[in-house]
Image (cartoon, rainbow, N blue to C red; front, top):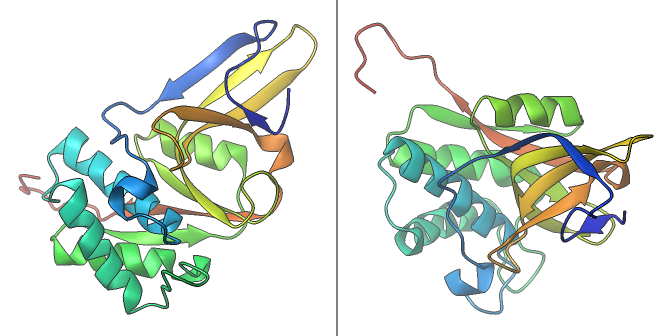
Length: 196
């Protein structure tokens, strides 16, 4: 099985799989053509998930993209250049969450593990993954699930991602992911009596 897996090969049996439902499906070029916007598209997808799954107050994907782009422009985003600095993704997310009154903040981790990502997905939260090397070098994807498979001898751990290049879920074998950062929304604890 290669680093980039379009479909799990037939000899591999699925042991465990979780895919978050109600995830927006679009390509990054549908949001804006010909610019370095993979991180922006991943943020729109993550926030759109909260809108679709929880009724969060975020607008449609096009308007949400403009809000994310405005926040990113204040934090080093360059459409024609390097795109979004990975170390600013959490701050951009926090700004947009605050703009729409969503109770949470963006949090990034520069050391990650499959078990940590799995725990976050199991809690119903998608993850943004900024990948430094490999097939997705200098690219950001949205992790929407995982799959653990076996051929009866070994187990493989796969991340289910929307890569922004297609509208389909693709799988990445985590053994080929060494350097990258993850960003997610850390929800604020609600006070007793809160409706939402």
